[in-house]
Length: 337
Image (cartoon, rainbow, N blue to C red; front, side, top):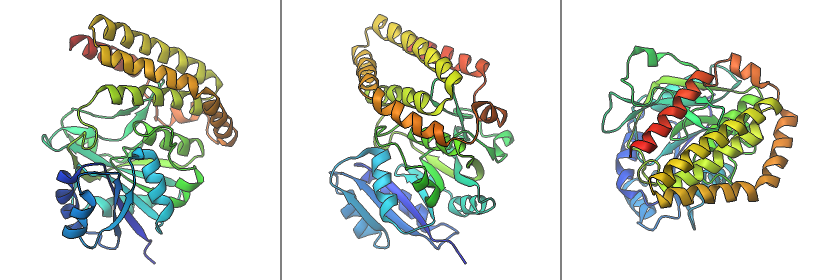
């Protein structure tokens, strides 16, 4: 008996991307799925366009932009499917994209999430995401980003996190986890979800045979804008507070403070006022949400099955050397601009 499968394409004023995305879904080798447009408060007639051009697509239209996290929670709670694929509007999935994800997730009942190999749309020989690592500062890191798509990225493996731009999840486990944390709005909410799944011994797998081209910034614009800095910073702190055990919590907070201090100094030195204000806004948000975060932490830690050491042994975390190198590169990039 075939499982009920749904594909949800999320958009916010991404009409210009939708035709290519849904045309690619029409060409999928796995045909037995329901397609949904999750319209997150668009004002560019995205829903009307899809309704006219792709009448087979079901539309979930929200009155305002609830963000990635809450938007998907609303949609996943109201659809009837066992497996749910999440897809960004600015993607073009390969014809075998969905079939390969389903094949992988059905191979092991403990697999919660299967994630695609994501390549840059305008440079399809370069990796955007080949699975993700968890880090001491709470971020999820795209393995292989900006690297050539060579055979070493063709090996399926367990990963700390997969990218929400193109992933397949088991709906029952998603609901058991409480879905995405809606306080995140967007950024690192996929990292948090996968991290919490691993704590309960549910697996996340990278599937290189499932390929997607990704334009990037479909609804948000360029990388490292003030809004992205704000959301990313506060959500990294939330990941640290909620998901680490006691010892790693202290180390994570220390590393995060050092990282944040270095970023702040450089932003101020370079007179990047908007970015500096974004960091201040993020810190204020973290302060206001501490009670909520530690309440969530208590619930998550009480249920956890795997320890931080066990997750590290599975190779889900960046090593200290890799994390330090990432930190230096980040500081260098900020200072250079």
